[in-house]
Image (cartoon, rainbow, N blue to C red; front, top):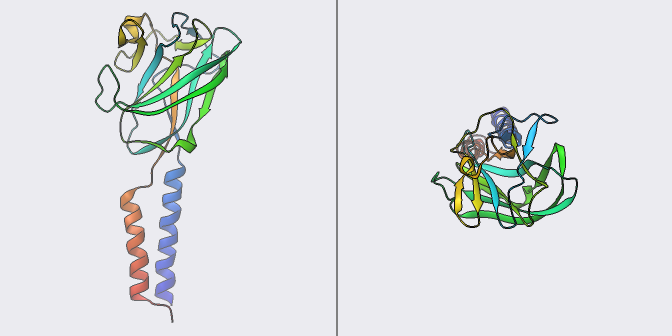
Length: 208
């Protein structure tokens, strides 16, 4: 019985480790915006166009739980279409679309909007693209940061008469303030080890 108890303690520790791993959320961002700080709102988008960023997890797979973005320039309500694509090829146009949904937001210049998509089970294993599509022209709109730098390989715009282009070509001088909160998926090797522990516990010290 002592041996069984020891194996069960190890099993419980493994379960707790898996739970802690799954609960450790992190925010992916390219921008340097600090909430309440300076940003510029891009008024040049028209209905049907998209501002988007490529986000790269430190490791995969991860579940995309929330999208956060700065959306302002006018304090009025607007619908936007949130898109998420696979972007593992890291080309100008994204890969397969993983999510698309309409959400209502109200323009606010100094606080990030947040859309919760944790119930959609969007799992990515590498680079992915998050886009905000506009259903009306002008502001409120997404923002670019004001730190004077832009990562041209991670900021994009979909323009009606040109398709996908880099954000600098669109005229942006900063990174889009579009972020994603992700949660690591449970480690497959750790899960397999847990199964093995339970099997060994039953084999070596069966209950009587």
